[in-house]
Image (tube, rainbow, N blue to C red; front, side, top):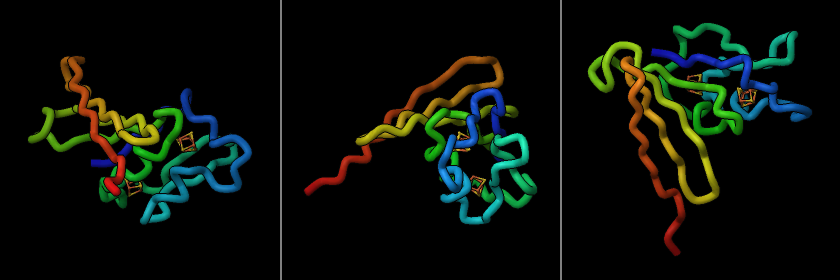
Length: 107
Ligand code: SF4
Ligand code: SF4
């Protein structure tokens, strides 16, 4: 498994010194390339932590899932809000499932 970067959605995180996805990747796999878009060094080194998927403000990164979870070619995207993450699972037949996870901390 690995991630796929939709370069038509990625804006390279604008003027940020380091793109958000690159900052959170524990494997230092992501970087802004010469065209100003995000790229991955070696997809085989990705360990599917999904940190970059959650971090991207433009939903430009999706993660491929194991065949056992959604079927071959299923992908996962995320939209991270202040108190929740909305996960979107897209199956090979194009159908989708949405999971909303509350991230609000209890006091
Ligand atoms: S966080 Fe998203 S928009 Fe920013 S560089 Fe990475 S893929 Fe592109
Ligand atoms: S899923 Fe994790 S290891 Fe893979 S590219 Fe994204 S942040 Fe890096």
